[in-house]
Length: 486
Image 1 (tube, rainbow, N blue to C red):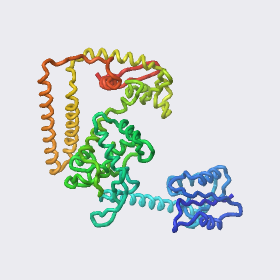
Image 2: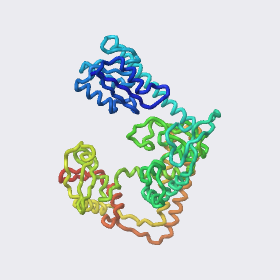
Image 3: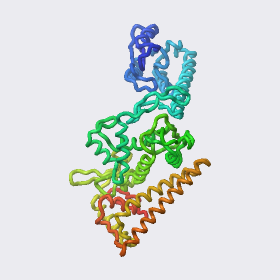
């Protein structure tokens, strides 16, 4: 039996319809033939229903000859076609392309096929490269490069530097929600979860679904499209190793920005910034630089805690590892019982070892060890409540200085002068805070001293203490090995 294969990804005025392809291919088939057609499918890969049925019939020896209108209707990838051609040759199936006028039953046809596939792949790759270059170039010039507008913005036309009207972002009715998100998250006690709950309580729909979650909020908070980018934003990204397409003096504290460049899809867009660029955009930002940076420092501090602390069943969350595969161990609850399960086994199927350690017995044993370690630590002055805000401000100043010092290595003479001035101002702020703390302490007649005890600590405090003393806990069957940091 002969086969006709026809494919069309979208209906276009300058593209031949599926019926037109079939009519042309009928001239090359015998009286007995079968039509296989895929409408609305790209030729980039072979994941097409009718195509899969065709190849299954080839494997069963039902097909003698395949006729297509044009080669790229069958496959647009050299790698895919090379594999398919081996299958066709193995089952002695001829291949005829009407448009390219070749027949693989002849040596010349086979040679022509190889040449055409090479040029088809070359054209596809160069087209894709032109599209990518155009995308990056538009972004570097400040226009919106393509895709849906971020939450809080719509797309409109704005004049570029050369006077042309180009796509750009414009705040819409959701911009006030974005401003609320940044202001709420910047509060000392706020978390992504608490901000999401407040938005859901007020029945404010999310960007793509009715409710808000931590992931959606994190993407918004990380994005530079909202910031009114000034010198501090420039230095923030310089310190993270991100290359800026615009010089420092163009960061006017008005325009938003965009991060562009190739990246690993498995990596976070705003966490792994290697091989990416920051470009100022034509649109104005809606979040002041100081507020945006405050949220970035808070997000970074949260990320540094890693995966530990997210679990709600044990204060050992994030420390439990499978001794065989090294993947994290998660806690499953069934009523009043808790089970430890290797994620390498449950999620990836990479491990076949079970864990039978009693969670509460493990906690009791580790708690006793931590209690003994704390007894050997020196007494500490009881922290005063009025110093908490000062401690937070000092930590934020240290974080800013770290970013500035990182940016110093990449800076020009202009940026170095700005960095030095900024560091001097931060040092003055630091000294003022320290002086205030000293004044508070000097008013206390008798300092209160206490020894830190593990048992009375809260659940969250136990997580923090455990993470400070323990590197990991390796679990194997009924055994547990604690790897200490000391």
